[in-house]
Image (cartoon, rainbow, N blue to C red; front, top):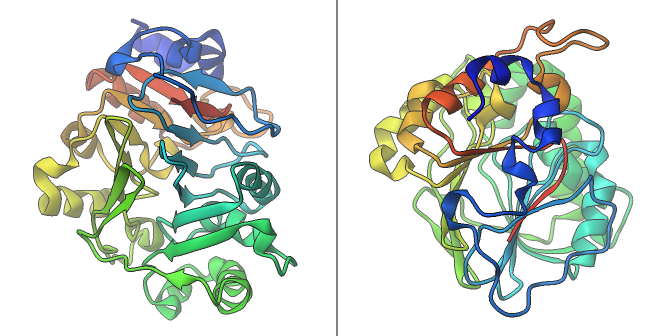
Length: 328
């Protein structure tokens, strides 16, 4: 087990050396095992140093995708054993071309596309993927599921987001995806996609502080014999509300860390989740708390706090998305 000092100073080099996920080809946490029978084909696309983790049971795949441009983003693709697909967010605008290529290689149809909240580094790839393409980027969508707070309210508090909202609502929702079904995003809704399922856990929590992040809608995915918690960019206040409303239902095997691993939910939230595995949607500079051309620790971010929490809570594996991961 690496020490607290290793955690605070090792940076992305730890991931490259295999401390995070151990490059994921052997046994370890969560009963990793080989897949029975034939696996789904891996798409022939330009992955970022794709690493494979044998973790699931019964077939199927989960792709945790890194940003193509080393920035904050969140993009997860769940592919059930029957080939049904759930996309969570998709990432930042520059991630769109890769995501479109990847989804076309998977067959070109997404059964459910879920957006956690109204920030561009989460919905931007969907906008870019379909940008200036009447065929929606060559990808069809069965249901688009999201619950964003009132647009006027969000823009009044986060004025810098207005250009992104203009593209999302005008170009996408009222434009290229106008004919796509907008699915029910009510808390408690359970959606089956093949033999896997996901549940919507909360309605947006409304705060004037950190408003759009705190309005993140979380989902719980049951996939491959594991439970996966997607937290979006949930903040401290929203996380505390979620703890009150969900109680023991917050317990999950795997958590995607809130707000890219820093300044999101607090330690008590992660203690309630009690995960064995943490997935960090975190670029290398944020992991290192490093400003451009600076040294590790030169930035204002709080990533090191979360690193310490994961160690103190006994998380067995941490996967840092400076590369793409395939859980199978």
